[in-house]
Image (cartoon, rainbow, N blue to C red):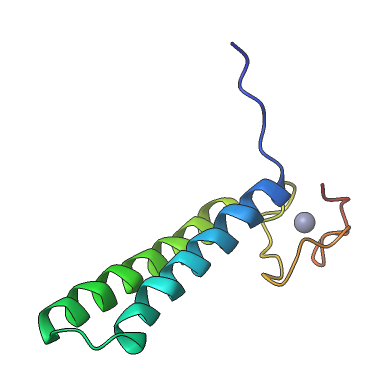
Length: 87
Ligand SMILES: [Zn+2]
């Protein structure tokens, strides 16, 4: 089976989901009164997910031509560093 190459849009979606899930997990203890232990666990978990989003971004979400960092607000059509077309 041939592995389909992921586009920057695919990577962007993964990062978006990780940040969203991490945010929700960290929000749960703020919305519901929970014991200090659970608050700690969920905050730690949410923080871990956020960190993995950042690590994922550093590893995969960059220009395939020059490795330049790309705006996290969305995938631009062209790399801001080298001007290569992005997809
Ligand atoms: Zn580039």
